[in-house]
Image 1: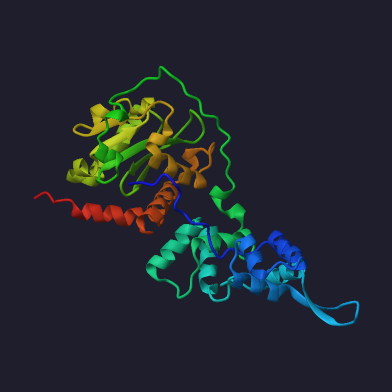
Image 2: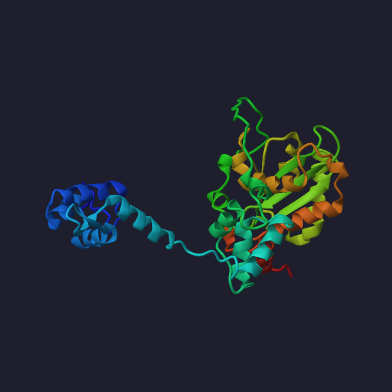
Length: 346
C-alpha cells in the first residue's frame, strides 16, 4: 500500500550557517543549557560542542581575568577557512599528457571535450585522465589553451522562430505509418535522407543519408537540388553495395522536398516515409549530423567550390567521431559490425 505522506527524513549532518551561529551566540549569552540549545536548533550536541570549540576565544573581563566567550563571527571565519582546504586539487600536472592531447583534439580536430575524454578512456590511452565535467571546468576557468569560443555548440544561439504552416504537400506514406521498430532504432537498415544547400537556388548541393541505428553517414555531392540528381546519387549507392543494397537499405525517411518526389518509385522494394511539413525533428539524426557538416561548410558557401576530398574528409570525420551513446565507439565501427552480421548471398 502506498503512503500518502512523505517518508523522506530531514537531511542530517548539515553544516551550520551564519544565522545559526548567531543564534548560538545569543543563547549562550542568555546562559541557556547546551542540550536545550542543540534541541532548539535541531542539531546534535556533538555538533554544538564542536562549533563552540571552533568559535570560542579568551578575553579579559573588567577584573582583568581571562574568560572564554563564543563569537559567531569567529566560528564562521574558522569554518570558511577550513572549507577552503576541502577542495579537490587540480589534476593539471598529473594529467598533463592527456590535457595536451585534449587541446589538440578539440582545437585542431574539432572534437567535443566529451568525445575526447570518452574515447581516451575507452582505449586506455593515458594513465591519468580527467572526466568531461572537469575538462569543461578547466576550459571555463582558463586553465588550458582551449577557450569556450573553440567549443562550437557553447556559443550558439537559436534565434529562429518556429512557424507552423498547413496545407503542404505530402509526397507519399506519412511518417505516422512507419513501423515502431524503425522508431526504436533497434534494427539495422533504416535511413534518413536530406540535402544541404550552399548558395540558395544555385549550383551543386550535398545529399546526405544517415543510418538511424549506427549513425553512419553518406555524403554525396550532386549537381543540383532536383529529382534527377538525387536518382543519380542513389544509383551510385546501389553500385557500391551491390546485392547487399536491399538488406542495408530497408526504409528511407525524407522530408517533402520536390527533389524526393520520385523516391518511392525509384527505390523499388524499399519503404519510403515522409515527415510532416516543417518538422525537422522527425529526422533528428539527419538534422543533427547536418549541423556537424556546417562546422566545415557554413551557410552561404558555394558547394561547387568544395572539393571532393573535403567532402570525403567531412564524411570520415562524422563516421569516426566517438559517440557517448555508443560507449565512445564510432558509427563506422558499429556499421561495419552490422554489415559483417548480414548473411552472404551464395
